[in-house]
Length: 314
Image (cartoon, rainbow, N blue to C red; front, side):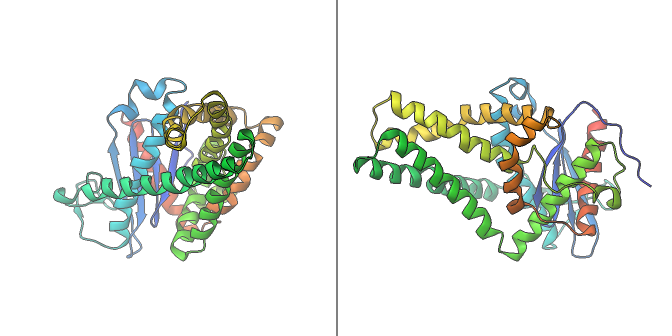
């Protein structure tokens, strides 16, 4: 039986990937993926750069760092997991049974195509969730609707687009499996934080929703953005170009405030009032998580144990 690891004063986070889970430790990232053969393939590496430096310790600044990290590490892990899940050539990296990596010339976390994909994704997200609602808001204002009402409509449209997008992609079978791994990741972290053994039966007792989920982060960002954009639009008389640019430029500080709110919620999640405040965030996770199968929980446990083992080496 695997005993529950001793819980340090640290938060672990993660993301679901293709047929697997990525767990982010303070200075390491671990990925576990189910190979078509049934084997669980593990990979871990030490993180360097500004995501592990002092910027991550500064309140209001670390939120923007986490937002960038969520995008970059997530895409890197998905790139890696897709190669394992599709059974692309890999070779033993000396980490022992169940641990493989790609050849040096195709290292999964440095692939230039990955950064191109990320750039395309960012452009798509900005266009869909920022430029589109702003264009609609600008049109409504030209029809005589008050600016405060226009900003509220813009925020509502942005939220509806976000929810609709998640709901639509959730209809795809492959994405549903990713959402199952997402649930397995949450349940595993819950078990760890409750000091329960990391066994499938114990992990399955916990909910598939988690207060610190990235879905919650995005919802808080949308809510804080409503207040920030309203204040900006009321204080600055701007045209359509400035309005669009303001949505992008204000995103890092908005992410900073949102992250601090999320940390507050995680610290005091046992408080009834705090739980009530985060009810919409938890409710939205009904779209982004699914109840996992036992073999998916096994993968999440493998990823988490690999992350904890890597962190213990620091």
